[in-house]
Image (cartoon, rainbow, N blue to C red; front, side, top):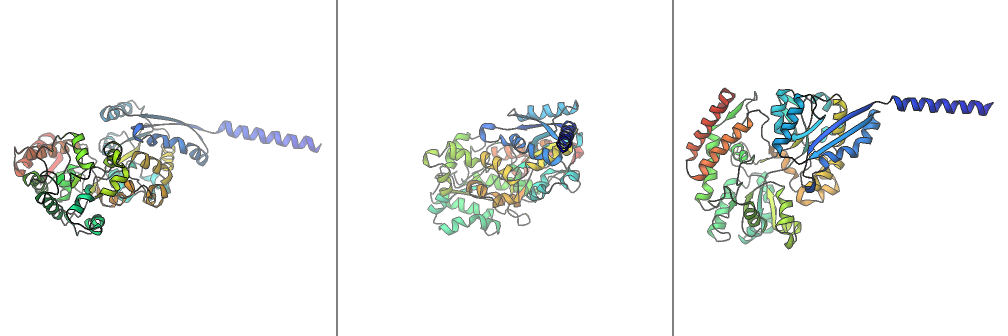
Length: 447
């Protein structure tokens, strides 16, 4: 009799458990990421598969996870998301540049995340400055996935040839932070290197060779604003002219080669990576991995660079601004097509951890997005990356505004006119103003 009762009890438990399993909700979530998998960026999507089971247990559901990862042209990639959004068929989670928030949020393609962010402790670890790049209209629309810095690299080898001591060289990044080494000091040092023959004429300072966000640093550094307190685009003539005067002084004083705009990338990278030819170079932190793998591998790669090169913030140009850099985080956003945004957000939170983000940062040579990553052994021991992590506390970013592309193209027009010698800095500024007001009208305020 007891055996019969026990058997019946076990059968009842089994039936109940089967019922729970069969009743468990299955939620379909699709994530789309752009990634150069061969360049170590696969974790942008692959990290979700690593945390899927954990999120399932936490929420008590089954997740039918679909990962779409490709490396299409950015234009095609973004256009496909826009078209999918219009058809209400967009992926639940889309990874893209944070600047797309400025177009996708007002279009209703993505949803604000503030309420859900408050529900996940993981997000409190994100470097505070990075949240600024996720805002539009007073709300938060994305979660940073990775970051980088756009610093100034310097040759320790050439500074030593100028007579600098090891202590002076090693302390340079901190002296930049403290305002003890300004941009005027950088220019004077580059001039000394040219005058004394430590570098060839034109090799004291290299900057970007084409259009891109880096040019905004010069404008920001001179006190310029792109957005006012109401989110309106702004163009500041005085800041723009001061920036152009500084940039145009480099070739005029033989600090920068006259053909730097449009210079072949292989020539530039060969010159800079050797640490024997160029004293200062404005570039992106990701350049380090490229140099180690493709330009100085025969000299020791990363070890050679660590011995002979370092990086620092842009030194102070304007005392009211101080030292700066610029970062361009890619961000996870949740589409308005998602039927389960809470599950999508739980997945994003689960990949926003030191363990998960370290996988991506180290494999792809990006900066981590979390304060505590610098405390983890894997990240801290990777000196090529971790030496730049502090720069995120001093960073700026491009604005989230639908008119940003027009603003950026007008600024690039001014830079080209100035660098070609076709216009003075003041004339180049007016070219930018004309283009801005023609394209944007009252959407931009010119000061």
